[in-house]
Length: 292
Length: 209
Image (tube, rainbow over all chains, first blue to last red; front, side, top):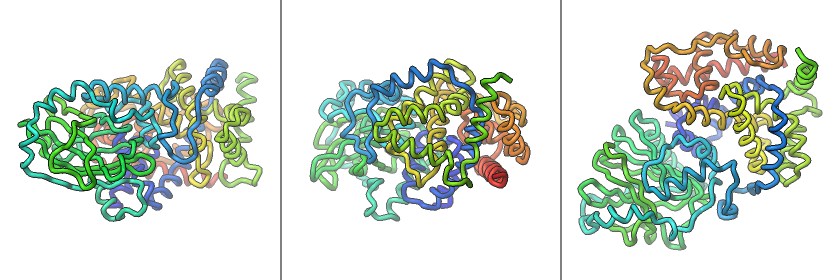
């Protein structure tokens, strides 16, 4: 599998990965020295290519940049999303807009939003909104409509793992990354915003799975984890994996799913180990496109 | 060529050999400036700006093909350099590479969203005509003739197919999947062409140093 991942190094270096794929590959990069080496080596070529087009920039650029810089706070050396100021400056407008769109509409948001992809990668994008404030009015409607009691249906807990935890079982982590990449690489993959930090939900009927990937997620309270719920078109709610973001807010969760029957994916906070039925209203809900 | 351009070229010539150089290497100086920038040193940042703004703007222009948009992209990228300076890691590459990666990504993201890229690419049948960019096309707006010659020499060592795949992905914002579809080749082949092309460029340019 790592060989399969390895082949993404070249497209990664020329920025030719889908945003979701890029995120997944960067997550892998953190744990794979071979791929890091390959990327650094190929980047010698792209650096020369990129640098070979230098032209004198318009004078207005310097003034604009220096003005912007003077009011732009810098990121600390270690990823620490909590320390981020609430008001993100213009450079992040795209990411913020993307996140906001996902938040207020609770609906599908294109994953191609420009500024978002860069920021998602390092997990330091837009400010984190407190969980309590994130409930989208629209999500309530159908969530209540979903008969929570019918959860006795197949309960599948595929498992979630935090990306950044070096102590986590490496094999399990790589398997999870591989699963996520499989979804990301599926030809029918659709990506949507998921309102947990800067989250992205990828679904593929081809692989029969949904993958949730993101960063800048607040860490849940002690003894609690996030849990994924699949709300099916017939109204049943299927328990998905639980996960806890890493120290830098990165997270990754993959669940098998009969994608055609999934109406929405929701997130709750549950006691450690997860619940069979949700114990709270979801704080984030992403509905599938009408004809997913 | 104007005086400005000549000066720019000379500056560039001096700044080019980035890897196998004496300790007084501009790449090292650039890394130091970036590290000082990370500490909030605006003077260091401004100096850094002077060293990279031309390359950042030129790259953006090469990709988005519109001066206003390129200026916008360059501004975003350069502010991001300031914002993320502390995340630069000397161990994993040069400062210039780190900065140009940010600029490239911003430019590609812009192209993809501006052109309703997805729709455009999906509409492309496998046989639809692709810009078969020869070396001339790839380097048409290059500033420095010396650089141009160097890049041309490198690109000339590539096969047409490698060059084509690189051109679509690096300059036109195609994903590798989109490039494979547009070229009517398997994904693995597309990835291999990109990789082989980069290796050939890298090795060729490395040898000149």
